[in-house]
Image 1 (tube, rainbow, N blue to C red):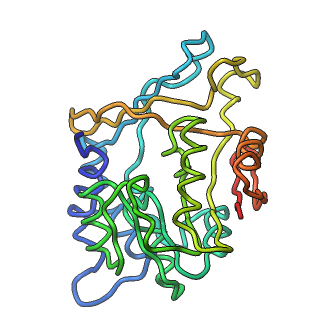
Image 2 (image 1 turned 30 degrees about the horizontal axis):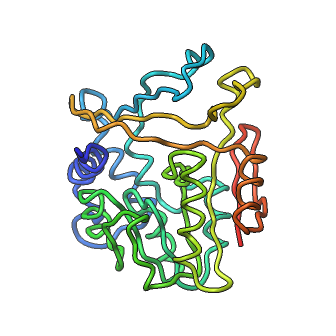
Image 3 (image 1 turned 45 degrees about the horizontal axis):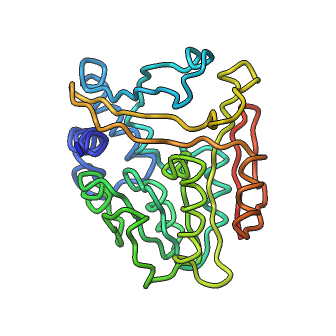
Length: 266
């Protein structure tokens, strides 16, 4: 599988000259500003990352889903000060030994390190993992979360930027929740966000069979396409039903006017 997202993250980082300006260390805010300034010209010309999206349902309402949208790479390099309220709340819920799953460019792991937390960044992309390490995250694992043996246990599993989407499907979410039990110490918890995308269907999503939040994604960068992969957006009610069925207690921590929400599962 082509590491298209990892290549975009790596190129962005290299063009920004890393996170440290000449002569000393930089703050998180400086990192983000420097990266954006150094790469704005290049990304405006040809170095854009695109996401191709399609529904798995084949329903007429699918035309509401944008087939191709730009994913600004700079979003993966946000400083702690630039993170939205939802992510701040999520970081405050982290305790003990933390696994940041789908760490991207490592911004949340870096923020947790700055808060003196014991955090490991887990990222499946080799190129993105190199960037995470270069940015100063002390513990980095380049691996698929579903392949972790579970010998090392954690107190918090963190998935940001709809990281729970890696479950891919509703059935995959059941599988992930079972895997999470293997990775967590007794009393540990999950913290993640998602979104209800029923608005794409005018608030009236298609009926079963199938689930409207199961999408098919492909990344495009410099005319290279990734292999297709499933990505999940889950609504609160369906999530509550699934977590309860798998023996978790779900607590709503935050929601906004755009149907995005943050939960903790124990």
